[in-house]
Structures are given as C-alpha cells and as structure tokens.
Amino acid sequence: MEPVAPDYAGASIVGVVPALVRGPRPPWFPEPAREPGPVVLLLIDGLGWTSLEAHRSLLPRLGALEGRAITTVAPSTTASALTSLATGMSPAEHGIVGFRMRMDRAVLNVLRWNTDGAAVPDPFTVQRHDGFLGRPVPVVTKSEFRTTKFTDAHLRGTRFVGWQTTATLVQQCRRLIGAGEQLLYAYYPGVDSVAHEFGLHDEFFRAELVATDRLVGDLLDAVPANVTVLVTSDHGQVHIGSAGWVGLEPLRDLVDVYAGDGRFRYLYARRGASRELLAAAREEYGHQAWVMSRDELVEGGWLGPGPLRASVRRRVGDVVLAAHEPVGFVDPTFPREAGLVAGHGSLTPDEMYVPLVAGRGTGR
View (tube, rainbow, N blue to C red):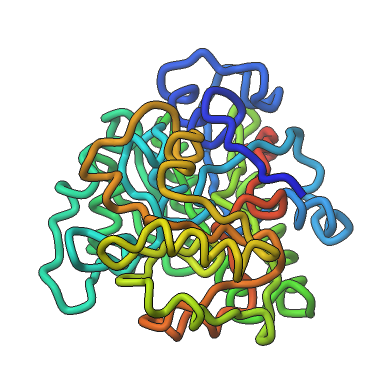
C-alpha cells in the first residue's frame, strides 16, 4: 500500500470553502454545486468514501447524490481537517497539526483545549486565521460547542447557530435559507462518534449510517430546488478493535513526549536522541507504519506546501508513526485513547478519501 498524498492544490477539502466564498467553482465540484444559488455545506464527521461506497444499499438519499471522492489533509484527524475546511488552508499554514500537539513543553488537546497541567494557550495564539475567509457565515452545529476554545480557534468570525437534535439542525438550515442566506455550514458528528465507540463491523455503525442518510434526506426535503446541499467529510475510519492497539515500550527510553493520534503518533525525542529514535522506530514498527522524521514529513509536503513557521514546526514530533496496518499506537500518557474501536489520522485510502457529493433541494 502506498500513502495517499493530500491534493492541496486540487480536489481536497482545503479548496471547498474558497470556491464557495469567492469562486470560481472548480470542475472537481459536483455538477449541482457548480450552478448558481444558495448552498448548504454539510460536513458529516467520519464518513469516508470507502464507507459510503461499501454501504450504498443503506444510503438511498446520500448514495444518489452526484459527486466523487476528494482528499482530506494530513493528519486525517478532526482538529486539523475541520480547521482546514473552515479556513481554506493546509495544516502547515494554519498550524493545527494534530489532535494533540506539543506547545512549548505542554501537550495541547485541541478538541478539549486543555493541557497536561500547564497553562492553556489562547486560541488566537495557536490559529490566527478567520473562518470562511472572514465572511460571517452561519454555522449550524451542536449547541454544546458554542463556548469551546476549539470553536474559537477554527470558526473565528462566523455566526454560531446551535442545534440539540437533528430535527433542529434541519429546521435551522431551512430558516436560514428562507431568510436569504447564500451559504451556511452545518456539522454532524454522529458517524464519527459511533465508529469510535463501536467500530465499523456491526449493527451500530450500519444503524448510524441509516440515520445519517435520513438526515441528508430531511435536509434535501427542507430546502427548495434552487438550493444545493453539498456534503463532505473530514476523514474516514479504520477498524482497530481491542487487539489492534500496539504499545511503544521498546521506545520508552528515547521518547520525551507523546502526542498526535493513535494512527498518526508524534514522538518527541529526548535531547540528542532523535536519530536513534527514528532508527529504533523503523526497526520496531516499520512493518506496521510509515515511519518518518519531522524533516521527511514537512519537506515531503504532507502537512501542506511551503515551509512551516518555526513555532508550528516545533508542534510536530521528531518521529511520526503513520499506521498503514489496522492498528493504533498507544500513548502511555493518554491511555484512554486505546479504548477507541475505530480510528483515523493516517494516510491510508480509507482515511484520506472523503466524499464531495451534492444534490438540489426537493422542498418548496
């Protein structure tokens, strides 16, 4: 298997918002989204293209939309990808380079915006760019996210509109479109949440896909025919199971700090041990992961084109374990992550390819 490179200059989630806000809409957009008119951009967290293709029989509304697969970003994780979607920038540019990343000597959990006991940074010092190119686009997302620091970090300058049930999500979108909004962004986390808790191989995941398809259908039925519903995602998923979590004990004496995701593990070396850590990681885990140095990750353009600012470069591990087998690498300082049954973050097709599909509303 070869790693999938993010298409930062072409068909990727990085290009979606700039095309919607300032145009032109590129040829890799679905045909309904290339036509003029209002757009509801719906992000379904965790819905990879592989899952959509494998379960089309469960997805009569979603599966009937026009479109194709595009790439997400590296790492293929929510914190980085949602920020890239909202800002139209790669992780190299906006600086959120993982779910957990080192900030000075502390590790910042980006989604919860807390650290391991150290001072918590202001969101603006971590990610300075406005969402949606500075336009006050309405964002219809879970009400509980209204006051989170991650919302401040990746949706700065937008208009928060909360929902507590999927029916409320649909009705908020309908009302905003009826009030004349030309672009709004809606976020639904159900697929990702269920995959993490139950995995991809049983009735819970299939039932969630059916519920998600119903949500897409309800949204299409709630908006008129001049409105496009454009659906995408931040990443796909890989089933890990309880037996797929791999310990990093052989590297313990060489590692100072652990961060990243289970499938895109950042290892920060003890002083003077970076080369030894890289060699040891390749020896121990090269059969399960693409093992890269920080220089190889950055200079290979995986996080985005161009050089990283020095402050962002320090957030990246000295060594990266990007899993290509269905495993996750345990962070001994964050062991609860190993309770996830499915995960993401790495460069496999299942994680990197996401849908960009669209259809016109069917309501009045």
